[in-house]
Amino acid sequence: MQTFSCSGRTALLLLALLTTPPTFAADALRDVRMPSGDIAAPYDVAMQAYENGYRSYRQGHFNQAEDSFIEALRHEPNLIKAHYWLGKLYHEQGRLEDAIFHWEEVERLNTLIKDRRAALTVENNEYPAYSQMLRVSQKAKDAREAFERGLNLLDKGHWDGAEVEVRLAVQLYPGNHRYLLQLARILWDKGEKQASVKFYRDLLSKRDVEFVSFKEGIERMLLCEMKYVAAPLMLDQKQRFAGEPAFAALAANFSSTQDYSATAPGKIIRRADGQVIINLGLDDGLNLSDEYSLDLRAFKAGEPLKDPDSGKLIGRGPDRPSADLLLTKVYKNTSWALIRREYGSGVKAGDLIEFKKTFR
Image (cartoon, rainbow, N blue to C red; front, side):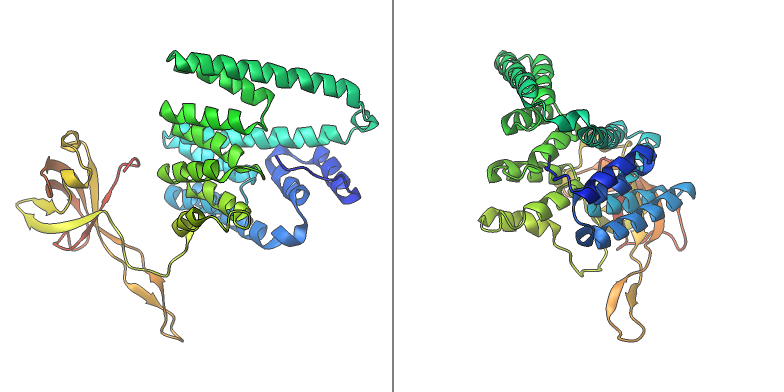
């Protein structure tokens, strides 16, 4: 957690939060986080993306809504309403762990705001340092004991018990790097990737985080396809880790490109008797269990878009679906798929393939 000086402007902003509805508390929070001149442009972009996402959500365009909410959080990770509506969208889609992740962010940010309100009360400004020191010392001791109990349980293979104890240590001492890292690793090893990323994020947000821990967290965020969580952390630590050779390799995952060609996992090789052959098989990650359970979509790439004045290629038009498919047979390097439904001129050799299931 960052520290903040209590300037007159900051005090007024925090006191204003008392009359700010929770849904819009991020508007005040972002003013407290850093000088307005540094965030005006990113925050405006984030708000525009959020508005686009909310509009798409109301219109039932859920894919566009998800993309817009994620774009908003990429520019402003503490935008509470973007977290809330993204969580709501995921919940309605059955993506429960994703929903929980974003709703936990809402609670975390609301708690942060409440803590900062309390810091400005008269009672807390009378500097009761000694009594606070005693309470904090006891809290640090309790956290250390909980962490040690967690490690002992972990050594004995009691993963759930270890998680409970290490969670308690983190709750008592949230700024301890070792506690955060251990909890993130336990959750990752248990397969709870979304929850793990949350604690990696908390660790990587620390100004003095070690690079080896930073690298581990970023790599795991990328494995979870949560680049929008990792991107702000990369930006925050860019100057500090610029001399690390491995940081450049991490940064390459976030570099924007101007390649507007269509990308897809595979494509149609041939059409025959109501089925198609595609160039994906066991060597490409498909499994025999995918037969008669994995849905695919065939599409034709959208036409290139050029600037009418300069003639410069600036993007690609919308892709055009050509068929819905069902995987029926998987071989080493190829597979067969049943044509369930066709669109437009129908599916043909050369059409691209994408998976319809979210985990693909």
